[in-house]
Image (cartoon, rainbow, N blue to C red):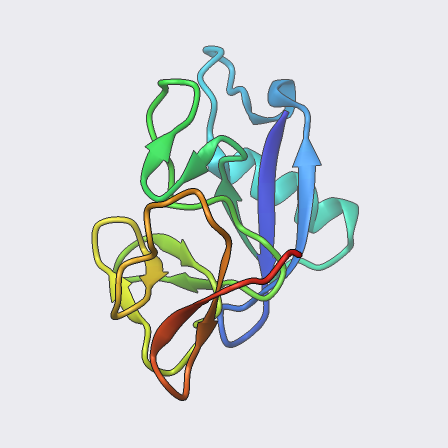
Length: 134
């Protein structure tokens, strides 16, 4: 199955749909994104809808099954499609976080502790705070 994200006028993902791979194949058996887009526009009777293909197996610019990564991240509702980067970018979780240009994921200004504990980000103090699970 192939996945497609429907974008609103601000390039924000408002829907994600699956389409059979056969729908994307042209007369030579080569997959074409445009065929999936046309299928969805026809299905929903929205000839001008903006659909972009996305890969369920891609996160942070890495294809988790070893394939070719596609548009940096799998699209989810509320994410933004960045035309210049040709990438889906999640919502910024905190004002202090910085976009990693390679992964198109947001990163905290302080590295997450590497000690197998669980932490929450404190934006006011810009620190990771240990979650007390006792």
